[in-house]
Length: 190
Image 1 (tube, rainbow, N blue to C red):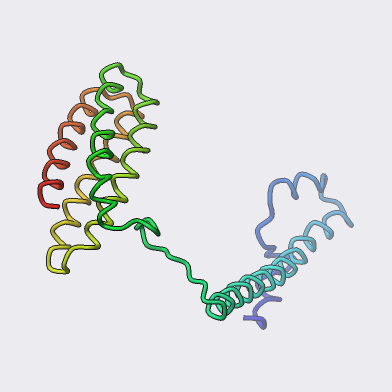
Image 2: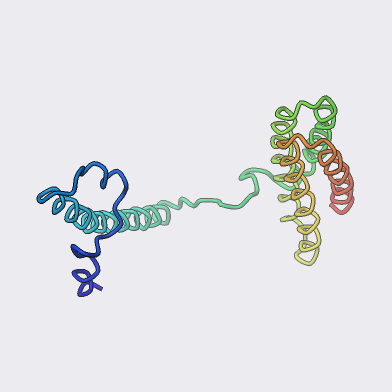
């Protein structure tokens, strides 16, 4: 690739130049034209070096942080389960979070769309965490069906959020009805 560089970036085939660079050079005359054609090539080579150094730096930092985590026993828990939440705590909280999700109906009826979105996002995230924790505590053969119900419920919650953003009342009410059915189905299976 390095052997092709002089051919690809030449006076007759300059690399991409921004409109700012072209207009800042003014009239294409003698020394200015030469400066405009040479400047992007210099910046291109310099930016590639900076990019390589940056990638190397990020890779070094990532590997050193992983080594430190292993050395000191630190591990990141990237699961969706709350770190200290047990299945029993999730089961105790699920009813309250489900009721909070259903209380969005009052905000929908009053057409307070922004408040409905905020409450929907808050209550659904807590409910999502509880349901996921409970699913993780179930035997492996029950999980696929529960995950499908979980997915259907929260996809409908997302659709309701979008409909509230668009202030589409009929779509919001339709999604809300689907959420009630899906939530009852999920809770009956858990």
